[in-house]
Image 1 (cartoon, rainbow, N blue to C red):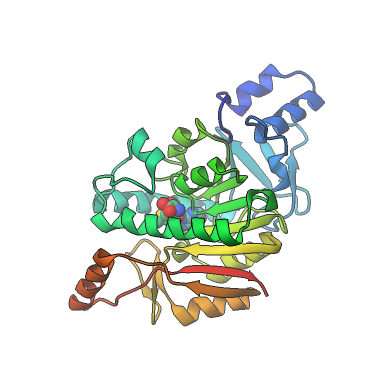
Image 2: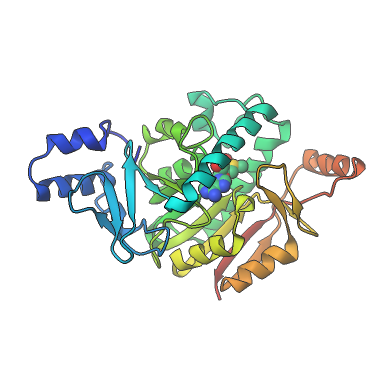
Length: 327
Ligand SMILES: C[S@@+](CC[C@H](N)C(=O)[O-])C[C@H]1O[C@@H](n2cnc3c(N)ncnc32)[C@H](O)[C@@H]1O
C-alpha cells in the first residue's frame, strides 16, 4: 500500500511483468513514487532506521531495500516498506497486538468509509463524546499554523509519525503536501491497513516504522508531526534525535495531542504516558530544538472532563500544540 490511485498490484507480480534489471529498477522506483504528477522518488526521503542514510533497491531488484551506508536490509511487504530494525520487530508486534486489544475493549470501532474520509470531523460511535471534538480543535490549530507560518507544501516533505489509520496524512496530502505516513501497525482498523480508503483519493507513502527510530532520511523534512503519538515513545530522546536529524535546517517539529501534566505519570497502560511539562521541554531542548508551547482552545466539555478527573483523584492534563525549530 505504497501509493495512491492506479496502483493495485503487489511488488512480486510487478517484478514478473517487467523485463531486464534496469527496467525493473526503474519501474519499482516509479512505483514507489507513483501517483499522478508525482515524479520525485520516495527513496529521496525515506531512510535507514538505524542511521537515517539513503536506501537503494538490493542487487537483485527484488523486494527489499538496502542502506547505502550500513548495509542493513529492509523488506517490502505487500507494497509497504518494513522500515524497522530487526531487534525492534518483536517489540512492535507485541505492542500492536496489545494496542488493538485495548482499543477494542475501550469501545473504539472500525470506521465506515464515509467516517474515515470525514475525520477529524464527524462523531463516529464508540468513542468518548469529547474525543474527536478535541482532535478537531488540535487539527484546526495545526491548519492555522501551517497557513500563517508554514511550512508550505513547496518547502519539503512531511512525516506523520504514529499515523494510525493515516487520516492526517490524507488531509495533508489532499492539501498538496508530500507525506510519509509512518506507523508500527499495518493492520486494520486502527493501523495502516485502513489507509486504502485514503489512497484511493490521493497519494502518500505508507511505511511500517518505529517512531523511536524514524525511517526518515537526514536533512530532508520540512515538518515532522507526532499526532497523538509521541507519548507512546519508548525512547523519547531517540525519537526526538531522529526527528531533528530528519529535519532540514528550517524544518519544524509539531507535537499534537500528547497529554501534559505537571509531573510525569503513566498513561492508560499500553506503553503511553503523560509527559511532565518540564520533562518534555528539557528533552526537546536537549535534542537541539527550541520549543514554543501553544495553548489550543478547548470547549466547555473539556473543562468539565478535567474537573471530573480531579474529583476522581486523577491529575488533570492539557493537550497543547508544541512547535519546535532548530536552535
Ligand atoms: C492515539 S493513536 C494516534 C493515531 C493517529 N496519529 C491519530 O491522530 O489518530 C497512537 C498511534 O501511535 C502508534 N504508535 C505507538 N507506538 C509506536 C511506535 N513505536 N512506532 C510507530 N507507531 C507507534 C500506534 O500504533 C497508534 O496508531
